[in-house]
Length: 485
Image (cartoon, helix red, strand yellow):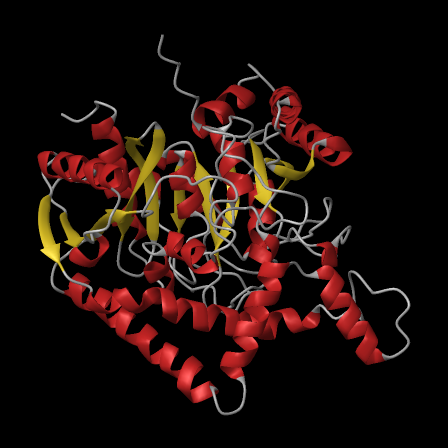
């Protein structure tokens, strides 16, 4: 028997506002599902902190607002937050021993906006340490597992958020993206993942990995839910100078037109000969559906995206090397015991506190920025980034409304499969990194399965073109569900 579709965020909030359920009841349901998932062998391990007095107080406050007659768009909705977004209640560890137990003195703008909208933050989700990874295996507190197959990864670095939504613990979660860390795990877990335009959503309170690339994104069970939450967290922020001073459209209302009349570009570079056969078949079937809904499908080329992975893995580690210098054992977080000099504090703290993948990227970035190599590596990568962005701008200027590609080159791989080959792990981001380098918005939506595992398809749009992006994704989602006219 087919499962009943999960209620939308609008339906959940409406039920709370009508008194048919409560924020406390929804929290308790989330707690039961989380307990069930953690009692499994092996446990899901989606959360680093969950429930407790903080969540209960938040749920009580949400119910009090309802009793007072206040109507909010996310009334009582339980949400999860990736553990590199600062919160005043739960610790913010970034999945690293170097920040174990650290509680921020301020809260991320996106978290505050969720609370203002009536949502209840139920916990902080697991992640690759400092968001550096594509599998959520590189957490100091162990890997998160894919709800579809516990032997496989959920993707990363926002794997905890993706697993929490896919497992039904929460209907929506926040993640962060530097090179695909929302869309890639969303695809591997069979949910929707959104990376907005760089500057559309405030980064205030997001612990920095690579500041010119980092963004906050949304993971949800449907395009409408993802659009709803994106609109809530988006907009200008005086606390973040990179947040754009632009009005935020009503994405849910404006996406109803779907794919009809849109020009959808299919970039040749995203369908290489070595693309997994199951992924190719699912994407080609989706393209047929896109065409059948009334969209014009057009082959296009983004030639410089073939350089995206080496470009990204020079720029991101270089910025990480600079950003993570603050974790030195002096100001906050872990301090190595027994150190007698400042140098000993630095060496001891960073050696003990950082995991192998973070150390690897810091060393790569430090080398790329070092005297004699800055021009050869970092500056050259920035020039390549500009060419990648120019490719996107040219295609969109030629009349293409959105681009459609696979989100990932394969389905979820086995835990430990890529441990001995970091470069193979990095290739998991092949199709997601270009959007981050170009700063354009992108969304991953479930389009089927391959070998019994979820497959995601990706739409990308021009900068601040989220309206067309959501319309295309909603149109495909509706058509695949049998709702097309």
